[in-house]
Image 1: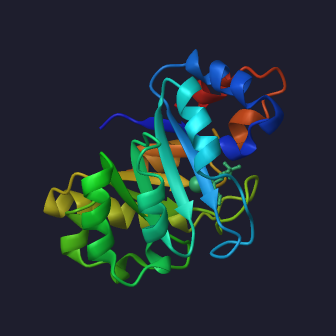
Image 2: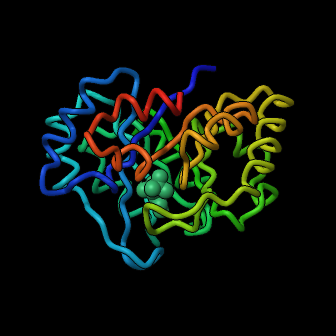
Length: 217
Ligand code: DX5
Ligand code: ZN
């Protein structure tokens, strides 16, 4: 499996979002990671459908939305015309997982589930692993960019890769939070094939994001 890098726009300069997206358009094979937060599931508030609609008009990349929200069911409907490629919701936020996954599969090309650092893989039954396109393992507590990577998540990546291999599941393993050139190698060797990175990419002083992305790759 090839590795996809998904820069998290949370760390981009919001005052020049258009220019930031154009910079990313010069780089190939990216997803754009969009952290939608509701100030309820996580203690932060970011952007919603009107901003994502604008992003869609500029970006050439697949849009990868990570919903850190209490009621993703509501967002499933209201974001359906934005043109998202992937819709990821948090396992912890939902009661009727199977129902929501079926609904999302009718609306979006790719559906992901996300687990907080303290949520074990054992909460997800095998038949669900077979239904999703992506599993996002949080390597920081969700809500903010620029936090320190929690190294214990590497064991979780290894365990999930084993489950994927044993059952020949097709989902991507995405890791999000504190990803840098220092830990990307371990993560990829452990089975991750989609890495989200925000502050590491956008803190490049000359806005040379290609260099940072190459280092992760
Ligand atoms: C955190 C978000 C992440 C965040 C990553 O809750 O889900 O996508 O933007 O940012 P860095 O790479 O700075 O940890
Ligand atoms: Zn995220």
